[in-house]
Image 1 (tube, chains in turn blue, yellow):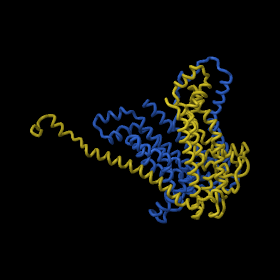
Image 2 (tube, chains in turn blue, orange):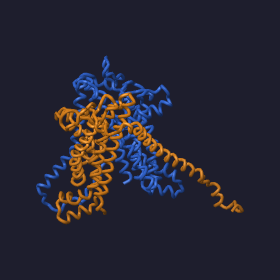
Image 3 (cartoon, chains in turn orange, cyan):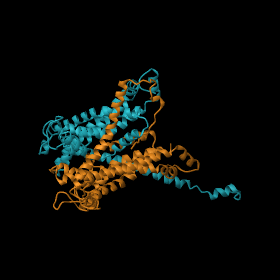
Image 4 (spheres, one colour):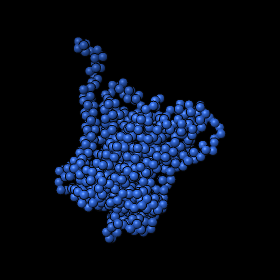
Length: 311
Length: 301
């Protein structure tokens, strides 16, 4: 996430003192455009809060947040969000286990080793992976990862829909994010630190491991937190790969339902819009939004601190 | 040298064993791991493309592109979804383009360092991290219900426009900031007002970056699925969509619909549809390259 630095140089102010009315009007219009984002944020929060409160009139928030059974369609109806949160975390953790080593190795290679030439090859590959529509990754999980990679390994123990295949493709999706943000963090480490270590007789690998990597660690952490937020909000890949089975399970061979998959399930079904099931969608979305917002804010905070240290 | 083992320098040399060979070997092994990781990523990408191509290509013909969805896979086509995707991408571009650039101009050229400005900037970074499905819920509540657009293509386009707006703003801000201050000073020295300076000097110089950002954002919009499920891109549409009335669908939704069916034939036409999505995205990326090359031809500083 790039936070936007703020430099206002004298050069950006016009020399004239009188500002014509038309100039003022333009400034107001431009400001309104810039405010669309804030209006959207406020709108999202208001929509989620209002509709979730409507749901909480019928289901107690405590039962919702601490309940371990999610049964939105089969009587008796129970709305305990823990299975959805655990399902989401299952996949996010596997995705990180995949993405952290691959993303960091790629980042270190790009920042420390790659020549301009190889960089021009590797970077586009990573960007292509990042640009693949997530529904395509879901298709890949369902048609390749599960039948061709996981079935031979686990045999019939693994279902058509499973956490592992979802975790692997979401991992693939967030690897470029970790790679590119961690590369930026490594590049932000001043050259002087590396040169000092070389002068002391360190080898390239020692400079990377003992100087560059530790110095960039907070930026790297920020990239991982942001990637986790992405993984938790990911929808289409997990809908296709992990299915819609809201069970409380840590077994990666089983099917689960994530918060996002539940939202899709309710909105694609014939659920009437004023039913309790449809209202529960907003409460689930509010939880998802809160978690991802928190992760994003932490990540931004770390990046901001990191930037201050080296500038 | 060995004749004078008692000399202090030689003694130090004996104590100090840099073990360089071993340390360098560790480094080489690590570099090998880096290259292996990148190779695995590349292989994953190739496997994905191979899988989609081998399954999808046999089904890809003119009838498929010009036909309408059918319950029989061999007769199914994707014209309504293809038209829907293109219409949505165009409307999204038209909506996000002016608002995105205007917001970027305000934030880079006008905004002073006040609390409000910092709030606007932080907010844009945070919006870029909101899960896309949340935008779908917002679109459902605001565009579909409150503004009574119903489950229309326009409601879908508005939702996606909001989704890509942060991306467009961030890309445009980067392009505007890349214009050196000497350009601004030059314009002011000629007596330009602030807006004349922006219109005459900044916008033409940054056009290539801004346009590239918008085209790439449109490419992202073409691949988006989740938010459109909430704003009603229904899955069985046999007619060509219009912006305001009736149902619509887009290519990724069509993929979703077919990929959830267990029969191999449906998986194959899902793969064929994926190929069409990827080709559309590839075309937009190529367009971005061309635009960048053309618009930045005369600019050098």
